[in-house]
Image (cartoon, rainbow, N blue to C red; front, side):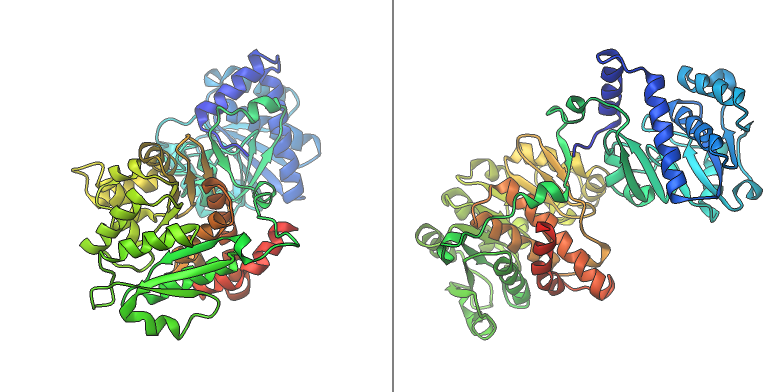
Length: 516
């Protein structure tokens, strides 16, 4: 499903009205009716307070109030605007509601009596909010958030930027949000995602061609679409049909990262997995691996790789392996940087680079000269370090703040500039393609904020790439499945006790659920 900005949604509105002849008032009627239906479904019998602004979002709220009033519900509209400042469509709905006897009060706030035993419909501001919420309206929002009244927001919680999910001064905390046509970026990006509550996406008559336009380049991952990416297992097949992944990982004190990446790789369906590890640590790995194979690589005698490992890695890739996964736990040094540089500029095998592999890239400009597809899987800190190598003069903390305020454009810009497939991990994980497409993941939970979960994801994506999926499809399926397995692990063990290996254990169940 496509995800839109405020401007893109306005364009869909305008084309629906101008090109297809569906008037703004008709869209408003349908929007308000959809909100009223959800309120009746979710909050049977409770009185309803509809808090409206003077724009079209307020008009949607007035329609919802009128529809609820017609069912006999106890409804009152609190209008935070003067009549002469209402938008044309909102004014039209205001007059209709007044004639029908809907109680409407001009207000600049609300009281405890208003909210007692009520459900509140938030129709103060829609997706077009362009400045911070201040003054009496901000105080009213704080009052509402401090109350026990559940809130159903119209289109987006008032005060959330529909493009970035950031607070615009202050914002309503909704239990549910009813939006129209398509989800907005602010519904899926934090903190907007948390304040949105449960999201309902209602079709109010926008033409399908507008909602699926290829000009809309941001997408939300959904189970139906992702399940179609799962590789088939043919009756007549053998281990060689499902890819051989070469994982270069681990160093003294960081062997766990290698084990988790390899185990996740196997659990995701790889036919063969070989771990390339520092030779002085071979005894550690030999005692723990079962299905995986190992390959000793030259090290510096301290449990970390030496530059000499590069030639052996390249030889193994050319003769045996289909995919290289490099980075989990390898450490950061001049030696690892030399390895990355030589492999990136020589290998023709697809690469997945994570963790210390990302931190070992000296210059992101080298990514433009690679000979094979590359998937990078940074968390925000690693992304900040990568950006720090392209935007001199900006500190890592500044970069990190900028990333979290605009995850989509950060990922998209870097992916385009570097020509790589980018999986920006976090809340939510964003997958960006060099061709300009972006995908927002919808699975996962806070319990996954623990060491090793990134190594698990790296192994999963590498496995799928080795099984023949494109870099994009491997990233999409890997990210969605990783979050789904994390959700099933949290269901069983709770978020506080979840560890990375729990995600690997739940991969079989996640696959089954995805295919149902």
